[in-house]
Image 1 (spheres, rainbow, N blue to C red):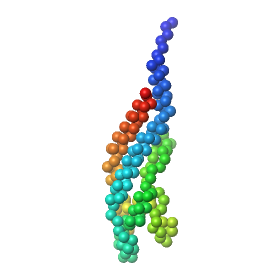
Image 2: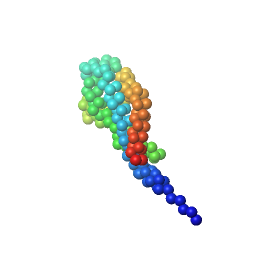
Image 3: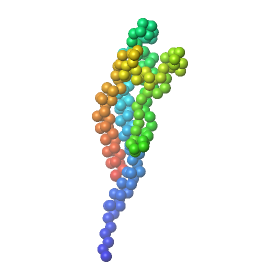
Length: 165
């Protein structure tokens, strides 16, 4: 009976097993870089939004008019913008979220801890009964989507190349 042995196949199998073991790390790195690109774009769009004074908002509230984004609200949004840690959902997809967290320093009777930054971001993005909409998240995502996907692909290719050496 003849016997054939392929050492190259064993080496390749070893490399594939190392690649499999590092999948979460590769995904984490790729998604982190893409999320960073998106977060930076959102921050740039946010910085470009016009602001109004606190006095303007008080006057608008008293007269029933529309208010605007104040400097303190904008600073609160800028400080609270962040990226969540990598998570895997029930379907096996890796996810990171880019968004706003916490409270700003605009204290009111209704919000004694400060206004929720998620509420302010949503009001600015989509508008409300008290504020005209000034989209900044959706345009940022639309501008960076292709770059983020390309960057993830680059990182994945680099990491696979390292694992297969």
